[in-house]
Structures are given as structure tokens and as C-alpha cells.
Image (cartoon, rainbow over all chains, first blue to last red; front, side, top):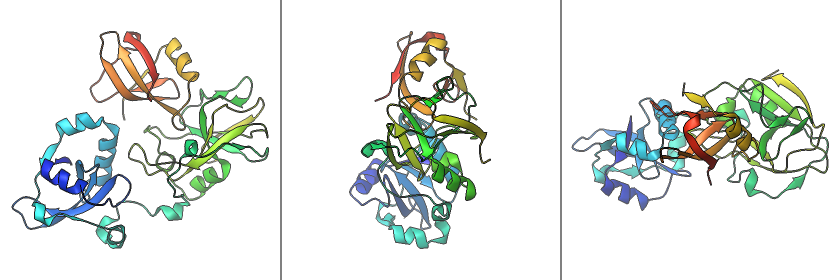
Length: 233
Length: 69
């Protein structure tokens, strides 16, 4: 269940440090109760219980407009004096908080810079980039000129291979907003005059990100798209 | 699964010419002919507009569509 916090508690949490970017993990007892429960609090505003359908609730929270969620959520009345923000160490040590898979085993990356936050670099003419999609007729590929259209994102072939070899979920790794299964991989080998920006996929749409993303503001040269394969093959 | 609706040819063409915000999707703002404004909506592959639960949008009733900034 998604709750909105009582305004007094929300103000109180605003003055406390975050557990991670954009969220706090707190433990607290409900009003007039003594049993402490744990919640992830987003934006010091919404609370999602960790122990009950956390993944489904988190997805719902990020798939709807916040104003709509705020309107439809019940108020979570807490015993304010029992609210405690947990540190990352406490979270990691807690067995009850294993709501997330161990991403390090999936060869994911950490860092707060997405592709557009980094400077442009020239392609080396050898590195291959891959575009993952649920659509066989990917609109960002110019099939006639065999190139990537301007303003398009890809990942690197290396990161794609890591995603496949670790059996990772590409929708979560690349923080994609769709529920459709990724079914296609389009391969592009840019030329040395093609430029790109490279970074780490930031959390979005309730997904963690952590894959590599490469943004081609100007697209790529003709004859750089060279093959399409089913995902994972 | 979330419902989605296919945009019109001219809307698709417009979005194809605009940059993505992530691999395979764009975030857009929409104004309907009725005057209603829709903010930060997701379009997949420059073609499919994701709808919210219980929502029904006729793409022909879209006055304008532009990238969310």
C-alpha cells in the first residue's frame, strides 16, 4: 500500500538526511501502536511498506502522476517519536530489507552522471553500440541509410553482453518506462567522426538503472547500423 | 499491462524528429482540443502513447504534442 505522510511527519523527515538519492528508509510505529514497521519514504512525502508488496507498490508509485497518487493515498499516522531514519549500513545489514536483488552480481555501474551530463567524445570506429527495444520497426534506426537517427540512446555492446550474461532485467537496468519485454537488439558501429556522450542510466520509473547509456545527439553516419538480432542471441 | 494508443502519422513523424529522453521513449506534454493539458506522458518508439488507468484518448483530439522539458 502507498501512503502519504501526515504533514507534521513529512516536515520532520525533510529535516533529516536521506538514506539514498531521493528516499529515506525509516522505521516507526503506527499511531497508538508499539510494533515498529519499516517503510521507504520517497520525497519525504510518500511511504511504501517494505514488507508488503513493496515492488508492486513502488512500480505503481512511479507509474502514476504524483498528484494522482497523493489524492488516492491514505494518510499514514505514525507515532512521531518512534520515527527513525536508517543508515545505508543498517539497511544493507538487515535481512528484512532484501527487497532488491544484489546488483553488483549483475555488473551494474554506480555514479550520478547520465549520458547528457558528460562531455562529447568521438567514437573510435571499433566500438559497437546496441539499441534494445520491444519494437522490431525501431523508429530511431534509419533502415534505408543504415544509421542511427539524431537524438537517440543506445547502450554499449559490452554492457549489453553483461546484461545478458548475468541474466539481468534490461527494463530495470536501463530504467525503461515500458512493461513490454525487450525482444530486439540493433547493432551500430559508429565511425570516428560520430560523437556520443556516455554515462550511467539513472533511476527512473521505479527502476534502478545502472546500465551504460550512450547518447548520440547527431545520430551516426550512414552504413553504421549493420545488424538486428533477437534479444540475447 | 498499461494501455497504449497509436498516435497519428503526423504526430509520429514529429516525434521521430525530436530527441529521446532515454532508450526507446520520449516524455511529452499534450494539449487536447478540449483544452485539457496532459503533462510528462510517455511515448514509446515515437509511436505509442501510454495511457493512465481508465483513460481513453483519441489521438485525433490532440491539438499539439511537444517534448516535456
